[in-house]
Amino acid sequence: MKITWLGQAGLLFETEGKKILIDPYLSNSVAKIEPQNYRRIPVDEKFLQIKPDIIVLTHNHLDHTDPETLCHYLNENSEITVLASKNAWNEARKFGGAKNKYIMFNCGTMWTEKEIVFRAVHAEHSDDFSIGVILTINCKNYYYTGDTLYNESVFASLPKEEIEMLFLPVNGKGNNMNFTDARKLAERINAKNNIPIHIGLFDDLRGEDIKLPNKKALRIYESFKI
View 1 (cartoon, one colour):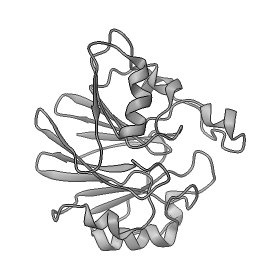
View 2 (cartoon, rainbow, N blue to C red):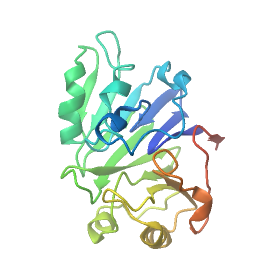
View 3 (cartoon, helix red, strand yellow):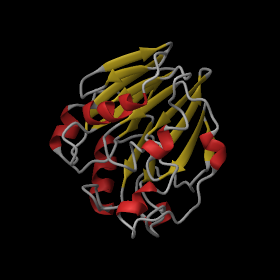
């Protein structure tokens, strides 16, 4: 399996013959509304050319559910399973396409695609339907928190299974955890690997700057194999 950080909170999983995109943001659309949040790193357009099998959208904020990115994947001819929390689901369905499957993926929902299991868990964020997602691949759990604050409801929704890898936002803005609370969350979940994301695209924060147990700090567009 190969995992690539696409910048901001975007991830690409390539596993079991499937390409899975989570919250891809590969445009500069946010800057049109919030000029201070311009891309510090240009879009690598090769990622706009891929043909994903599954797209996961955790909430309906522009840097997670971005029409300028999604239009490269979703169209009348694509055959993609889209797992999206309610508000993001309403946005994604505007792309149509009779062969696409738009699944409302709210907290507590499970979806199985071949041998990969997706579970939607709670995220404490300003979109009321925000979720995190746990991917179970080859009996290992990969937890993407989505945008979230440190909140007991997050922990209450998690399964009592070991987490192989945790991807968590640490930028401390827009109802995301700061470095301190992200570290507390990571310590409590006790994953084998902790990867800080949602940094380095709109700001100058670096994964190297946060203290996390079992940290794996990535650069944008960096891939690693498991």
